[in-house]
Length: 136
Image 1 (cartoon, rainbow, N blue to C red):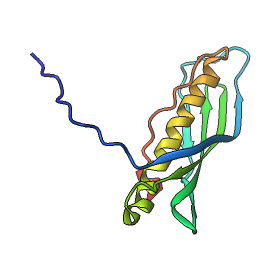
Image 2: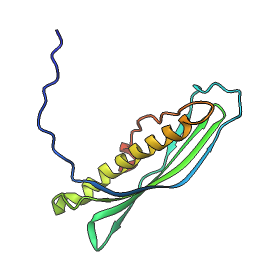
Image 3: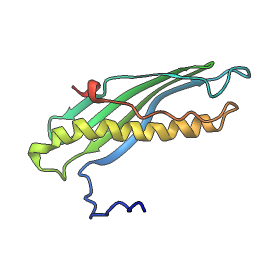
Image 4: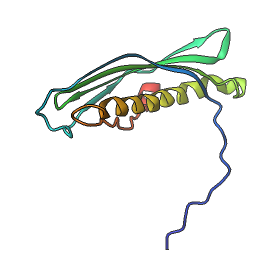
């Protein structure tokens, strides 16, 4: 018998998303033809983090995502204003640097699924992306 994973108390993260918006979005698909399940090539920009010099615990993060293939083209820029004010001062910048891009990509993933799910070729599910190289 497989044991169930043991639960421990969850600790809330110190990152708060104050605002999230789509700055730009373009989506095109053919009227008919290509296999909707065809492979897509994904590209993602290095996250742009703009820190507020007067409030080091706040920042704005911008990320651009592109996907193309199977006759579909998606180009999107997501932006969020985030705050890590709940974190200790010495940890705020690192917390934003690592966690804010992941939160923005997760929000963008939902928008992409909703937008493309309402079209003729069906939903595009953005894969999880390895941001390690982009964050260095």
